[in-house]
Amino acid sequence: MTNKLKIPFSEKIKFIKIAIKKNGGILILLCFFLFLGIAMIWFSYRAGVLLMVAFGIFVTGMALFTIVYTIPSSVMHYYEKEVIKKYGAFTTAVITKKEIEDHSYIDDETKKKVEEVTYLIEYTFEYNYKHFSAFSIVENKEFYDQLTIGLDIPIKYLKTNPNKSSVRMRKLKNSFKKKVLA
Image (cartoon, rainbow, N blue to C red):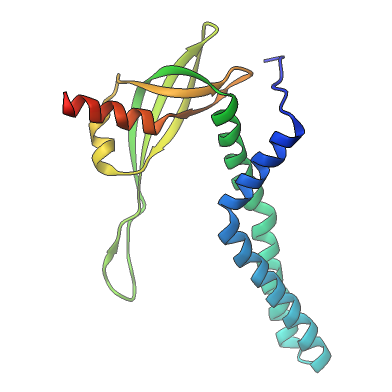
């Protein structure tokens, strides 16, 4: 696509603030560990305890690594969601694939199974005579089970970059509620 979405600077700042708020808890935790690591380095160095200096460097390095390599992609994800929410166009897509990713495991301490399951749907839609495909996560199993391959679902996408799209989950869930009540 050659045309580019022109977003006012004030809107960009607003979207960035929302994206950072969505990551606020982890950012606060990482800043705490960053501060802790720097404090450990400072006080250990002044006391001459080199092993604690090394540990402080490790803690600081892990916090910085996480901030540099994971937070930007997460912030970008939420930023794009906000852009789609504000500037996206409405259409329908067709579910083409359903997938369950099971990452469950047995906890070593409690010997109980910890379930970590992700329910994914793949959908396709057409824009300007081109087909686009994307994935979306469905939060709960009961709703996921109601979705069928070939079902039309409401989505929102960016006309300037149709590869950026999201399922309108609230509208989709409401349409199922209406079918049940009818």
